[in-house]
Length: 286
Figure 1 (tube, helix red, strand yellow):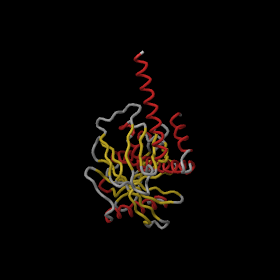
Figure 2: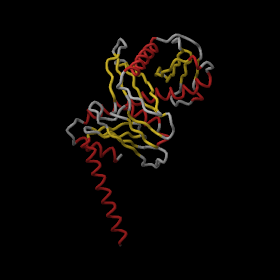
Figure 3: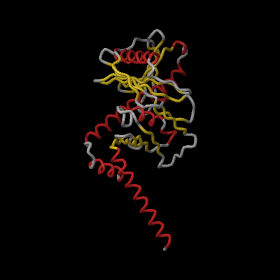
Figure 4: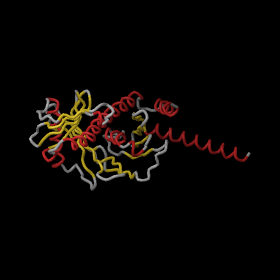
């Protein structure tokens, strides 16, 4: 509570409207959680289908989407749905429902399939996309009433690392044609979590330098939520020229503030710590 109050007081003193910052925080949080829900369905859906579907060589790909409940769809090389896995909100695989009936895509699924395949083709032909050793691209299509997007995340293919960056966003028009392709980070950030400290104050940080993505990205939030059990990070901070963003695990929310406000908070905390240290030193001499 004290931390949030300090942030609020700092924001009120900044030139950027606090309401605008609140809106940025809300939008990026919602988008990040949507990515996380899709990726969780894909993670567990892949395991379930491998256990139950006997013709994996016929699989052409998969994608996940939210349809009241999270669903993971696997389609054949003939572009027919061959497996549908539906999850409860807690993603417990034991409670998931799997349907191995072959069928056509629904109209909604056809849109997801189309933009996913067009994004996949663009990745193969556009030099903006960089491949790194021991990583794979994960495509996450997100369709809302007013937008169609495919996020491309880089995931590790080895243990004990968490990868941020080397992520991209493809936006589409209503005709499912690619309108724009952009990078969300300048490069790739790899955290080795082999000996990570998982105490209650565990945290991490990286910087943002691209002008269009000064705040924490939805892909950052998705990654933080996916790997929370491995990292133990209670907070994570991204810092840029314009914004500092703090992800709070307990509230599952991003707080975006100006970098100026962030510096004020940091200086305030530093002074507070110094006073506490001096008091402890004086008390020990008595």
